Amino acid sequence: MAKITLNTATLGNSLSNLWRLTITALVILLLWQAIVVCFEMPPFILPPPLLVLEKLIGSYQLLLSHSLITMSEIVLGLLLGLLMGLLFALQMLLFKPLRRWLLPVLIASQAIPVFALAPILMLWFGYGMTSKVIMAALIIFFPVTTTCFDGLRYTPIGYLDLAHTMGANKWRQLWHIRLPAALPTLASGIRVAAVVAPIGAVVGEWVGSSGGLGYLMLQANARMQIADMFAALFILALFSIALYYFTDLLLKTLIPWHREQAGH
Amino acid sequence: MSISVQLSAASLQYAGAAQATFAGLNLNLPAAKWTCLLGPSGCGKTSLLRLLAGLIDSSHQLSGQISCSDGLSIDNRISYMAQQDLLLPWLNVLDNVCLKAKLLTGKVSAGEQHKARQLLAQLNLSGIEKSLPDQLSGGMRQRVALARTLMQDTPIVLMDEPFSALDAVNRYKLQDLAAKVLQGRTVLLITHDPQEALRLSDQLYLFSADQQLLPLPLPDSLPPRAVDAQLGQYQQSLLQKMQVLHG
Ligand SMILES: Nc1ncnc2c1ncn2[C@@H]1O[C@H](COP(=O)(O)OP(=O)(O)OP(=O)(O)O)[C@@H](O)[C@H]1O
Ligand SMILES: [Mg+2]
Image: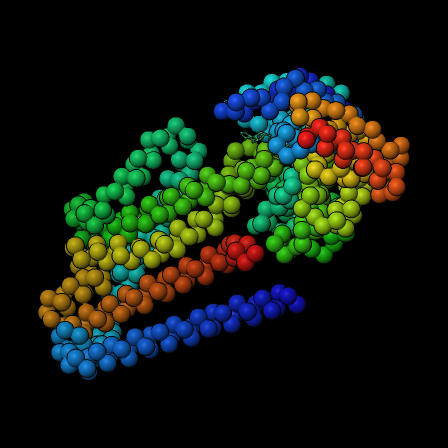
């Protein structure tokens, strides 16, 4: 009984979320139109929403092919960054002597602005997708590694005591206790990563590329085709929002116990 | 088979602490009996229990000997119940009860699952095998923790205020239940509650302020004792003693 109420509650929640999102989007569109009309904006400064929609429909094939490039870069970068962060955190946890050497490396990786690395990445990995994937992976490396490491390090001591009295070895303890206990903390890192990864990919495209939404925006800008630029921007924003909500949903499904703890 | 445990000349000083938490402490846990330890907060009860459980790491200064009556080491022959139930929130009740098998072999056999179900039934917990711990009440969670302890099936059980978070009725019921299902095991129970100690002890010590263990008298009846007039009198005199000892 209680379970049913809970489920309808979450369903109602996500429905009202959808509503809120729609209303927010509508308000933004209206404001946009209002600004164009009131301030008599020329279309090469701020195109009206309808013109952008026209472009979205008119050049949808071009937009689609470039979107696919950028989306692949983002998703691959996200996966690569997660994998790197996870492995790095595990290393620091398991090999204590290494930690003292790796921790400064980690902090340095954050101190050097990833944007400054972009030209070098282009030089090393070319103008194709690889450099953008690496760019996105680098930009999320720090939040993923630190949240993962913190999660692994601060396992509730009682759980470890229990495992110890049961005679569990280090690896089983890691797999059955430390890793699952770290998941809620790691999840917040992954959420941040999902938001930040698109920035890495697009900046990479701006610095040098032959495809992708960032490339498209630069091209359109150079030719003063501002409506095309807005169309690309619109798709990028939509994808980033969708990526965040998808990640959030996935994490909530995979870590059902976390939400319930938060409810207490 | 029941075994007794002898702790001799146990001393512990935490790293960075100005003085020893306890020194030269001796404690005998008779086979298949309940030994209870009472004492004020911070006197070192949990530390003593953790020392017995091998949970104090070598960065602290500790010494002393633990010997079992059968001459074997105490390692891997204790189970441990804490004030928090320590149920893993990502495992359902059945998997929590079978945690030891999972940690030792990586999987849980059908036979073990069957045994766990029987234990849960014995503790009045049938039908919640697939629930997550968050869906249970405090009393149920502590009973699941008791089932997990029974599933570990060790001759020695160490308990650190396992019932203190429960309400009076649930605590009373769980004390009776624990006394019944842990029969034949050598138990060390740490508690804040004089009544709990008097109900369950075969042997009762008070941790005094000068870090010695003071034996206390108990009613003649066998545990788990009812809370009757006689127990009330013992409780009264015990409370007075604790007041004197701890100011
Ligand atoms: N890991 C630790 N490192 C340093 N000091 C500690 C540590 N654990 C406990 N202590 C100190 O040792 C003393 C005894 O603590 P302990 O937890 O054993 O007391 P206790 O009798 O169990 O108290 P309570 O009844 O409140 O649970 C306390 O002064 C405490 O501050
Ligand atoms: Mg304690």
